[in-house]
Structures are given as C-alpha cells and as structure tokens.
Length: 337
Ligand code: AMP
Ligand code: MG
Image (tube, rainbow, N blue to C red; front, side, top):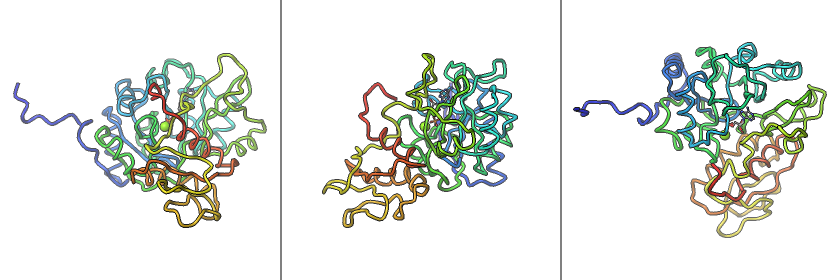
C-alpha cells in the first residue's frame, strides 16, 4: 500500500494551541465529539479532557498520561443536574454541590449504572468523582459539549501538574489535538476531593478549597482519609506517596539554601542572597498556592539537583501546599506511576 500521502494520526501531530474564541471553542467541542483529547484550563490546573462516555477516548487519556488504569478520573460537568444523571447525591453531597459549585470541589458519590459512562473512567469502582469547575473557558466547553468530560490534570502521571498551557505542551504536546490557552490558572492547586461514608464526609485529597470552609457550610467535621473507619473505606490513588514530583529533589523545612541549591522561599523572612523564587513575599497562602507549580516548573527547568523549600504554615491553603510538597519530596519507587 502506498502511504506517502497519508496524514499521520492526529494524536501524534503537535497540538494546536489556541486562545479561547468562538472558533477554538467550536473546534474543541467538535474534537471531544470525535473522541480526541482536548487540554483546557480550569481554576485549579489544566485538564486533559475526553468524552467520559467514549471508552476509547477515555483509554487514550490513560495512555497519554502513562497513568495506571487503577487510578480513576474526575468527571467534569456543566451543572449539578448533569452530575445527577451519573451519580447519586445524598443530602450532604447535594448541600456541598449547591454551595460550592461551580468551584474547586470534587465529590465522590455512588455511580448510577446504565447512564452511559465508560467503565474505565472510574477504574471499575462503584463510585465516581464529579466536579463542576468555575473557570469561564471550562464552563463554555462543558456547555458546548453538554455531556460529561473526563479530565485528570494534563501532565505525565506522577509529575508536576500544569498551571500554564506551555506546561501541557512540554509534557503532552504530541498527545493532544488542541490546547485551549487561557493563561495561568487562577488557583494553581488541584481541587479538594470529598468522599462520603454513612453520613460522614472524608477528605480524600486536600486542595484549593480549604477544608475549614467545607466544615463551616456542612456543619460537620471532615475526617482524614487515613482515619476513616470502615474496612471498605474509599481511597484516592492520587494519595500515592510520591506524586506531583519535579525532576529535582526537594529539601523541605529549609531555612537557607546550600551552594548547589535553589531556594523556594515563602514570606517576608526569606533569607537574602541565594538565588531562587518566593511563593509569596507577603506570606499570602492563596498567592503561594497559585504560584506553587509554576515556580516548581521554573526551578526544575534550570536542571538544579536540589530545591530548598522554606516551611509553609499548615493552615488554610497551606495544608494542600504542604501535602503536595511532601509528595513531591517523597522517595520515588519504580513501581509508583
Ligand atoms: P487528577 O485527575 O489528576 O486530578 O486526580 C484525580 C484524583 O481523583 C485521583 O487522586 C483519583 O484517585 C481521585 N478519584 C477519582 N475518582 C475517584 C473515586 N471514584 N474514588 C476515589 N478517588 C477518586
Ligand atoms: Mg493529577
């Protein structure tokens, strides 16, 4: 067969990177319908989207990321009514969705069978993770597509999450058909994931929405995942000890940086005279969360071996920042992602 004039498969051609406008949004919606991968911004990090009802498209997310198939994906929806077509929301889940959506909160609820979702999307679990994101471009995409969009973070599995279109291009540029470039993500750290178990709520992953806010609205204390009582307790594989990792090693709780190190500083008391960057010179945790991945990408791109990280207060968004830093600093056994 003569193959000289055949076009290479779309998944291996470099991604189109387009700013959101009528043309690019229509193209993105069409690409999802065609079973292709579309990277899009959310208020947390960039997502790698595919039609959640298309088994092949969902499989290509796992392949593109190199993600183990036992790690389920978050399904993005335009609103709560759409979410309820796929998952069962009890009173508490309803209350949280009504209050915090659109926003950086993912709810893990029982999966409704026969609704058309790809089985792969939830890795064979009886639950699914649903989220209604707030970012305007994400919302336009979900409204245009109408159906559910499976979208994990648009990075290679185990590596740093992308908060800018360039990060997606670096890691997955030859795997996606289109990257919608909306600049830097507003929050910069992943969504908070909450699961439910017999009337109580469990923090499966700390994230952009501080747990204190969820407790204030629900009126109940959230349990940490590792203290949940039941033997069939829900686990989020994203809790793998090594995750969100740069190439460089991280040295945590550093008060100064050595000759060979670069500093990831925080707050007004950062030591002077060492090269590095400050997550927030004023000590603002929201600003620090927004900058976290972008600054780790920046330091990592220098090829430095070790990044010295100053202590971050463990409250509010600091809880999610410290969680990511601990995982980024963890030993990386070969069998993890
Ligand atoms: P990412 O898509 O990269 O933001 O990661 C999604 C996170 O959601 C991972 O930590 C998954 O393990 C978690 N997740 C997705 N679906 C479920 C589920 N049904 N039960 C528990 N965790 C889930
Ligand atoms: Mg991720």
